[in-house]
Image (cartoon, rainbow, N blue to C red; front, side):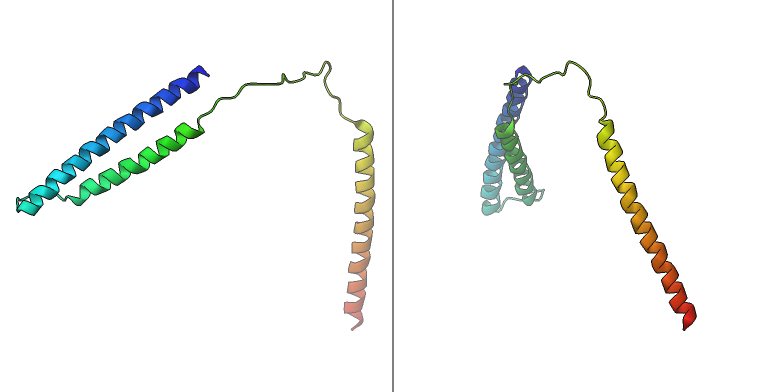
Length: 125
């Protein structure tokens, strides 16, 4: 629970920092737009500010989603620990293998019979 609170605090700090950066960039964008409307030369591409703001907004959404999904859990029911180890069920394994081998034997016999019949038909024509 303590680690969750620490992580939550880290994410909240990042959110605050990004929000401050976005506000500062938007203020810079307003100043640049005002300077451009006055006809002052600007020596960089103002569209880069929009891209940076968009990237910060995406990161902000991601962090807020992480903050909402960050949850802890408590164990409400203690797990039951068996007193002795489980042993393999020999009767079940033996019966399943017996039935499987029986079915496989029947399939193999029918397949061999089909092959011989197909060979006889092919040689007879």
